[in-house]
Amino acid sequence: MIIRAGVLYDGTLAPPKRNVDIVIDGAVIGEIRNAAEGGAYDLEAACVTPGLVNSHAHLEASGEPDMMTMISTTPTNQRLLRAVENARKSLYAGVTTIRDVGSSHGISIDVRDAIAAGRIPGPRMRAAGAVLCMTGGHGWPIGRAVDGPWDARKGIREQLLAGADCIKLIATGGVLTKGAVPGNSQLTYEELAAAVDEAHRHGLRAAAHAIGTEGIKNALRAGIDSVEHGHMLDDEAIALFKERGTYLVPTLTAPTCILAHLGEGTQPQYVVEKAKTVSEAMLRNIRRAYEAGVTVAGGSDAGTPYNYHESYAYEVELMHSMLGMTPQQALHAATEVAGALVGLQRSVLAPGEAADLIVLRRDVGSDVRALREVDAVLKGGAIAYRAER
Ligand SMILES: [Zn+2]
Image (tube, rainbow, N blue to C red; front, side, top):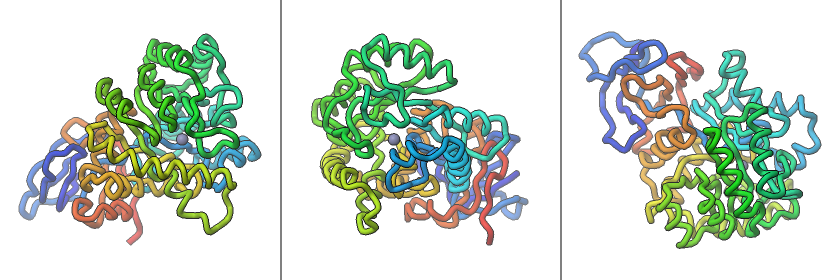
């Protein structure tokens, strides 16, 4: 298959290529060459980018206004069906790689395997299984409670047994769990360090949910691979991020969507109050961290209130508007950088790399919102989605 692209962003920060033919050879990119005058092609694209990588999602949730209560009260079979549906929606919106960082009953693991076996449509996937949290801690409806470093190790081993291929640890309170204060540390440094050591020993990367300042630094010092949210970070945390090369996944969409839907009156008051506090910290700190050189990776926390799996493009828009990234830098954070964090493939368009790409109707470099209008999605060289004209 040959795609003729008016402009091609390859996922890196290299200048975009104009008027090129992308030659797809089976599941990978064969060649990218100047468009031959009058030569044949199969698909014409105003703009082509790599498939997006959402490094922070919860497939079993669909943006319900009270996610934790929904998970606690909805039968498992129903949540599995939602996860299947959300995997398809993600893919059709251009997300070709996704990391599910916490689900109940191993739902994300089964969905990952069904996608890999070609039984259902969805992005390439990593799945954390249950989050490891303290007893009664943030995320307990999708969690395995661990108390003490040895129990944390056992929790990791249980996720391994269940088939997890990444690990999620809860270092602080969070917005969506009743009673969990985002600024407060939850798993201790000792628990986090034991868990990270155990995860790494088995070749699994570990992500930490961390909003409060001390918890962020506990996770960084414990050797975590990515800090999720990170909203109350301080200068010392910024220095630790840079020194250790830890990724920051700021999930800008999550608090933004909560606050954008206050009028509906559908969300628990504690969620609204906590989201306000967290959002203020986010607006104060995340741009500062990015400008100081912290590596920011795209991840939206899709599944949280009003934060839909098919709307990952919004996170790219927010990285542009809130963090001051150019559209290309925001795209880079949501492709090559997030892809490196997830660790399945390079998520760039170059010869020999997987032919995971999006066909857009407009140049995303001149308007980041072009990502909302996906014309076609290819995964592994095959057309996964094509919009009706
Ligand atoms: Zn999350």
